[in-house]
Image 1 (cartoon, rainbow over the protein chains, first blue to last red):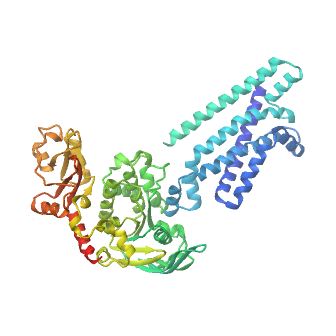
Image 2: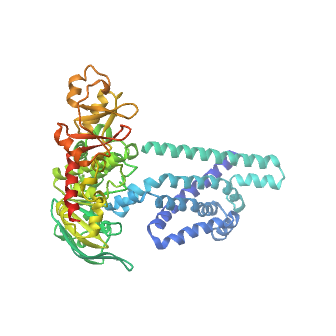
Length: 197
Length: 373
């Protein structure tokens, strides 16, 4: 195992989560703002989550071919649920009095969303992103099975050669990575919050 | 200023507003009152288009509001609600500046307005401008709620039970402030409440509604004198449930929760309380909550230098009454003595309230009215 594999793994996680935010945040906002779209968006993101990760990657591979693009696309779809849901729930949970005041004072829809609703639901949205990032570290193991590389390849090799040390070192690295990432995001969340206060 | 013409609003088969028409003059303090579900809040919300009626027309400053863009309309109408609804992610100053900022006021201008407004309710800019709403008490939050509605100097301010969630003392203080602001700013206020005392205290014009219709629209005096229906009588009637004033006691008319301090309270803190509540004398109580006496600002000024606590200041003689004493006797005491109020005590000599000349006026209105009923 070397740094290249480690970085490869992080690269996959990072890009899939960033893309998932770019897709999930607008979807969550759309579910909140536009009632007809609510159920389809929420149900679809739930449905994606019920597909076994390996099967989902396999299906994406049939369309996009083996490689990192497939892994990132698969992980993106898989991370949608926590981000979409938490965005929607966070927006929905804002004090109705605050929403009514914002409307009654003559703030436009976009204005209310950007200056009041999204900032207030930020902790909830960030929690969703955190869940997505940490679970992605584990799921990215399947990347190795569709030609994406990463730490999965180390574990796969360990299983094939029945090398317990190799399996363990891959697993422990993954666990450490998940823990460090979680801690880092907790810290980031905290400092963003105190920065605004 | 505001004109409703045959306005009707329905939710399904429920008629919320039933063909109502009325006018509110410029500079008037109009209070909408009635039982829950009578349509008073719907009426208020249709003025800034938070609710749009099916039929009829509403004119604000001579223009049909349906022809005005709702966002532009609302920026010219102040809005205060019971839930307060300050933005928790913004400071006090940012909250007050929300509408001026959107109307593209200059930064310095917004700061000046914020400073003036905070000053008007006795909150210092230096202390409060950068605080977040969660750091303020409920009363302070609603003061900011009112200032936020006034910030862009709208000619019309709508208030939807703004003090309904506050404790009685804070509510009374804010009512006094809103009367002062109304007199000073000469704006049109439309205020929703279900509390007849509040309506009588604030209104130039009371609009009493029931089941989507206006039952009576009149000055408080007229409503007290000639209530148009049994429901209105009932609404005002808690105080006149007896048959005339003979059976009424001091306890029925006193103002509960007067400002009081313990003997051990410091002089500085005590005068601060007096300044804040705009009163010139203070009820002092012993540590066991029993009544100790009245201390006036004159005596504090005279003896304050040598004293550490309020208990060391000589008290001024003041008329005292008992909750179960006949109201008439208390009023006599008030008129016969030099004091501005009579202290009403409970059986255990704790302070129950005070009877003032306002309480007396209210009692007389009720007595007049009780004869007719």
